[in-house]
Image 1 (cartoon, rainbow over the protein chains, first blue to last red):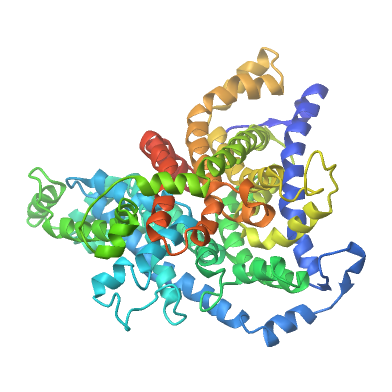
Image 2: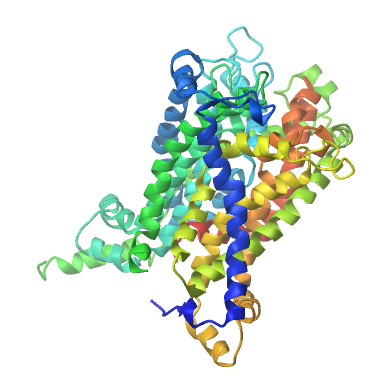
Length: 302
Length: 302
């Protein structure tokens, strides 16, 4: 650990420069990120139509009661967010890991495969929604042609049918997420000391044992990042469902409900803020987990 | 381990690490199937976009009949107003990325090169801010911007809503956290002697930052800059929230309206989707290494 220059030893002018270097970004961060976050929490206990500030009335826990008891899309949205997390964690992330492991071997065309799996990572989630819309469409989409149901009554409208559209959206989300996970694990696998693998092979471990007992645990820092990314992505999921149908009719997500309450008719800011606060509290779990893993040691040292 | 069994295991080990290249038929089969599945949605969009609607109406979308041309691209470009949307994307992306990198570099320098009481605390705050779902702070930001009164010659909404500035400011604030985290790790890894020597020569804090540390961070800026261009270009949410006039939307958010504009003309929609892929694809082809480095920089802890 290098010795860092103590602020006490700085000249007066340097102290002013340093104070500005810290103050400007910190003010931006506080005013545009943390202040609104706290205000969301505050407004969740208020009743407001979003017009004059003087119209804000205290509402106690009314917004939360309303959301939990008489707001029909809320529980489906919670279920969909959980499903999103489980699907990414059980299907998309392991798929990305599998791709990384396969591509980490010295095989021909590895770079071409990597480029192919990586293309969706470059695309916005909104565009992913549009591209899959063309693929999933009921009458002229490729999927129904491949299934042989296109232009027949049994054709499924994959994004329109509320029984299946969440799964269809999850497949589209996986298309992007798996490539991202692959990329991170490819970097992680390169960082694993080859001597570890050789030692395991010497001890008679087969390829599977070597991977799960030696290589995978050795990638612990990357694993933590990927766990956090997977959880946060499932809480942030918004763009795809919003592009499809604004997060209604089978595609309710907490994030989409926040926006529906904010910009829709009526502008029920209190209800939207209660939903935002619920989203915040859930998000704090992975965020705090990540921060303690990342900064725990340094905070103690300083 | 007994001496008798050891040699055979060593022999097997060398066989694995490949003096003689192994044939990975199964691996190739899995990768090939997945790669085809990965490309199908993109290929379908491109294929649909290249065919005139008269041809697809007559022969069906799932057919190989010609002709193929770029007419849909031309029509989509003109009718969809893409030149306008792309320009909006540039207006938003360029200042955002420059401001983000500048402010983040100030903060990163202050927390990583100088020791003071709250540097880790602030770094934690910055990192956490970037991990929040944007919807959590949407409502208060929207109301804040609505309440800020501006002269009409400056903003035709009389407030910060419907301006590029609103998007630039919030995008910057949101991305500063991530860039500060990445840059501080990078700067921490630079030798402390570099600035010690400058200090002996009487160089102040600003000289250390601008003339010594910043030039050394060029690789990090290249990687992070590429990544941020893609992030901001792909941002769907903030323009959706703040910008009401359709002609001020950046291209990523504008594709949401494309579905309405090109209703029932899937060939045009496909062409529009393909057009928006092109800039990211160009960046990917030209700056692939920077982009990948940027993504992995964020996940590795220095």
